[in-house]
Image (tube, rainbow, N blue to C red):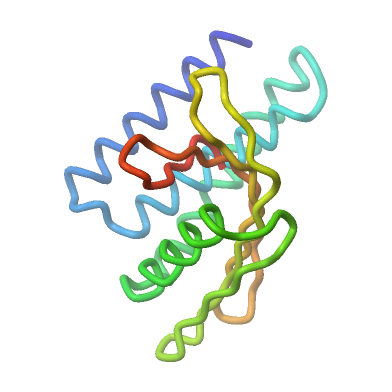
Length: 158
C-alpha cells in the first residue's frame, strides 16, 4: 500500500508540474484534483489487492470527471470558487453551506466546512464537502484543507 501511495504521489506531482509548465490550465488542474480525490475515495474501499484496484479505478474516474469540470470552469468561476472556499473555511460554521454562483457562465457550487482541528504539525485544518454544478450536472467531493502560516487555506487532499 505504501508503494501505491508513493506512485500516486509521484503521479500527482508530475501532473502538477505539467500543469504549472502550461500555465496551470483549468483542465490540467481539474484532472489533478479529480484524480487525487478519486484515489483518496478509492483508498477507503476494500483491503489488499481490492483496495489497490479501488484506488486505481477511483483515480482514473476522478481524473476524468475533474478534467471535464476543469474544461468548463473559467477564471471567473475559479475565482468565485476560491473566494467562497477561503471564506467558508475561515469563518463558516461547521455544517453550514456557503454558495457561489457566476451569473455569466451559470456555473455554481458550494462548500460545507466541518469542525476545525489541530493537525500533528500544529496547523488548523478542516474537512469540507465541495459541490460544483456545470451545465446542470452536479459533482461532489470531500477534502481537507489546512491554514498556512500566511493565513491562506491550502487543500491537503480532495
